Image 1 (cartoon, one colour):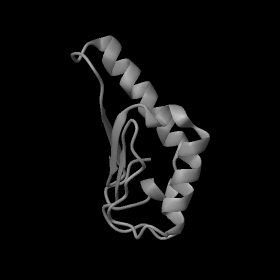
Image 2 (cartoon, helix red, strand yellow; image 1 turned 90 degrees about the horizontal axis):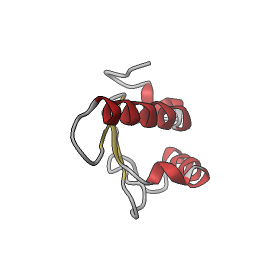
Image 3 (cartoon, one colour; image 1 turned 120 degrees about the vertical axis):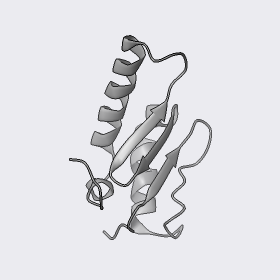
Image 4 (tube, one colour; image 1 turned 45 degrees about the vertical axis):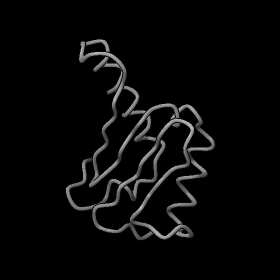
Length: 93
């Protein structure tokens, strides 16, 4: 599966998955939609996956509890996304 350099994946509550660097009929776009439909809880937070890393914005301030919850959420999300997203320039393992 081909992934463009520097892909951006936007996930947001109540919105479809957005990957502006891909054509809408790409295999990766279809696979992302399928995986996220199978795991709807991952559509409940604002998340951006870009250049092999992910970030999110949770409510509240940066307390230890909030940071731990966000890290756990992103780690679980990463396990449910196609591996091809992480195998790009600047990618994390």
